[in-house]
Image (cartoon, rainbow, N blue to C red):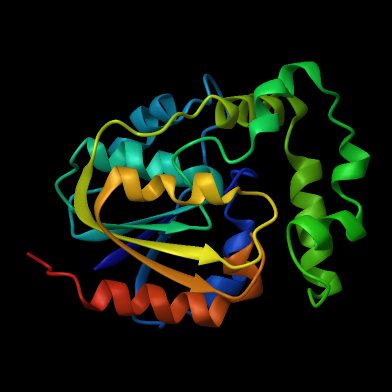
Amino acid sequence: MRLVLLPGLNGSTTLFGPLLANLHPALEVLALELPTQGNQTHKYLADLLLCRLGNTPYVLLGESFSGPLAYQLALCQPPGLRGVIFAASFLSSPQPLLQLINYLPLPRWLLRQRTLLNLFCLSSQASSELTQLLGEEIQKLPARLLRERLHNLGQLQKPELHLELPALHLLASHDRLVTRKAQVSLQAGCTQLTEITLTGPHFLLQTQPQACATAIQSFITGLPVD
């Protein structure tokens, strides 16, 4: 069984480092970067990525921004998909203020301040290396992509279709970026959802990689291959 990883808002695979270091070496992992050209809606991104998933059995993990993307891909019923994992994610808009993103400035220097990153994204216990890495990832993301992805998050609505596959949601106990209403929106879109709450901030895969890896591998082990 393969594990296919879809990254958060930054769109790159760089922040998967801590998780990859804690997954069992025998687990085959494919980390995909998000397309940077064209429309950034989850439906459009799903259409671009669908052909890259392959047909051999796999589990799809969508982190934060990519949770709705994993959901869209799963609704296409790709032949190899056996289950979906949502990491600190949602299916409706994570924050009401995102609906105003086109009218608000994006002070990029502010988004990479260590104090703010630790307060809203990580924690006071986060290493300086992790905080710096997150700041660099935010800085590398072109302003156009950042604004468009945030705008599309603001347009997300409660799902109307149901995902019939086994699904796991890794919930962050101290998530300051995603509202509780958005967190539970996954319950409306998944008929076979298991929720596990882990102590940590929004960036769970980076701050609690061992606990996340254990939950992920347990979920995969419980899935049928055929």
